[in-house]
Amino acid sequence: MDGDFRIHFTREPGALKHHPALVLNADYRPLSYYPLSLWPWQDAVKAAFLDRVDIVAEYDEVVRSPSMSLRIPSVVVLKDYVKPRKRVAFTRFNLFLRDEFRCQYCGDRAELTFDHVVPRASGGRTSWENVVAACAPCNLRKGSKSLRQAGMSLRKPPRCPSAPELLDMGRRFPPNHLHESWMDFLYWDAELEA
Picture 1 (tube, rainbow, N blue to C red):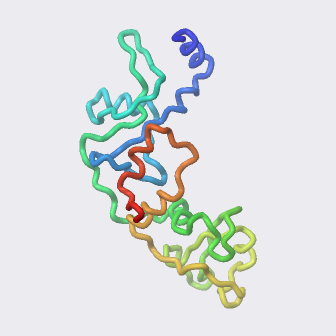
Picture 2: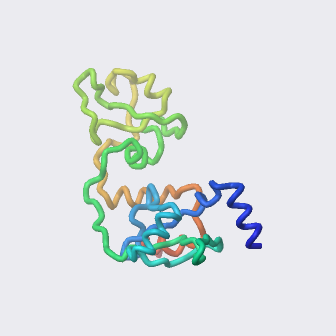
Picture 3: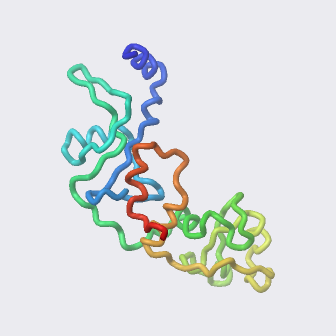
């Protein structure tokens, strides 16, 4: 088995890239949900050796050096608490997350881009309150016209989300891969249904 493992990773050097570690704050909550706070396994091992994190869960796979072997960490918790940001960064990703990865004109999820509700040509600013997710056909249809001129309406008015709102939105859109060792740490602080 050990020989097979060594050959497997020698022939596929990228194979260890598939072992990210979930990073939890000192309060055992993920640093962020979306994007999920993950480190490459090498960073998790380094942080553990520097005594910056505690290893909470591990993968079955082992990495070896000439003097030791170590199971790859799958969940690590920071020893020092990192205060969450209060201000939400205005990024394309956060904008799509706020709008639930849907066009704010027709509700479609395909070919998303963003659109200025009040066109820049008419003095519209690039801000939370004026930019929405839009599918390419709706964006093209609206062009540099106002909503009234284009005969279109918004599903909901654009606004700056709070950090807790964006965190909650992130929980609704988990990444494609969630390792089973992460599940106990991802949703434990979510409100239970009655």
